[in-house]
Amino acid sequence: MDDPGQANYRRFLEGDESALFDLVERYNDGLVLYLNGFVGSLAVADELAEDAFVKLCLKRPRHRGLSSFKTWLYAIGRNLALDYLRRAAREKRVPLHEVSLADGELLESRFLREEQKRRVHRAMSRLKPEYRQTLWLLYFEEMSGKEAAAVMRKSVHAVETLAYRARLALRRELEKEGIAHEDI
Amino acid sequence: MKTYEEKARSVLDRIHAERKKRSGRRKTAAVCLVCLCAAAVSVSVNLSPAAPAVNSECDSDPASAAAVSSEEDVPSAAETYAVYTDSITLPEEESTVMADMIGCLVYQGKVYTQGEALWGDEPGENDALLGEYVGEAKGTLSEWATQEDWAAEFASTYAGPVYTVNGYDPSFRLCLVQRTDGEETLQFLENLDGIGLNTGADLYDERLHVREGTVRVSFLSHQDWNNGAYEKMRELSGLSAELWEAFLAALCEAPFVKLSSQEHEGFYQSEPQGHLFLKQADGTTVELRLFAGGYVGYPKMSWIFVQLPGEAFDAVFEACR
Image (cartoon, rainbow over the protein chains, first blue to last red):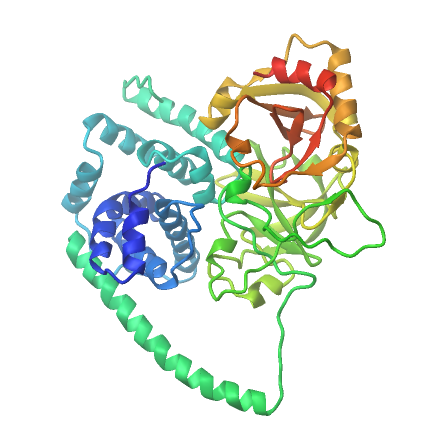
């Protein structure tokens, strides 16, 4: 998959800090919505997305041309979300800032420009977290099975099995609302 | 919610602050190191024979090196083999971020990497596969794991109870049980870390038991496999039992060969290819990838294949395309 983030990330590593602005603009919304699928709070997801950018820029992983910037960013975001959930189970953690309902709608409409996609996304929110995450990576982020597997730390086969089950569950959810979605 | 610009500025501020903090720490550490050297103290946390460096990406493309590093060293052993799978080693650079994009578990000094996962709709559905409980995977490995983290027994990217798998040698296959939302997943973990192989039988018969265990064979076209269209998987039909038996026999008899990635550039992208799924009586599945020229590969085996003779290979290759 063509990943324009790679070039911007390289610029950043070479010292051009303005490239970070491009990276945040390009990837922030999708990442926040993806992480929201784990933590169920846009405010927390927004903080975790920021943490993911910081971590990636500080650690400077070597891509070696093997993986896209986006795959790494999402994999790191996923780890942070899982860490957050582990911590949250032990301590009640309150997000530093609030995200209003309007903010959430803005984020969604900015990232999912078509009404059809937004309806599917809302139906996805009723699925199990693992199904939500798989569908998000494959259909909204348009990652390949390989890339989604790298993010989710599963085998390609495991991701495809998950995707198959998730699609069936999503179809059922959409049918409840009387929506037939041929593409799913 | 922050605007993009505010968020980018906040990220930059945090990066600058962290770098400043680290630079201070480095100065302190340098002083401590001088003291340690004077006392002639040395500490090593290397795993023996090699600490892990499971590379990123997925399990079928050696260019993306899912399971094995490019380490060419052959382990010393009394017995010699035709090929050795690559040992999993930890890169020496400070960041091990490349080392953790595939699930793995450190057990008895070996790195087991993720294989197939089996889902159960009901808890306990796959319990027949579970053997002895061997310990608890710690889930301590992440992109930022240190050598020390990797050196610990049961260090892993997953957390959960680890069992042997009934019918399989624990030095090859273990399984970790994950329970979420009432569903149970058996995640198999396989040790392909520096193992020696002579013929296909060493892997497919002795370790995976496909000759006696296969009850159904399905396939996917390369295009469907590439698109992840697993719902298009079809049973392999139109192939006589004799031809299938001949294929299995040849698979076990054929010697393992290690191809050179330089000489075979583009091999994994070449077409045609076939993807076979051998359903086993115990519910597991063995996946094989077929390439023109008689080459058959197992996921995560990188550039190691068995090469089958034309007559045994061609009929199956034709049938699964």
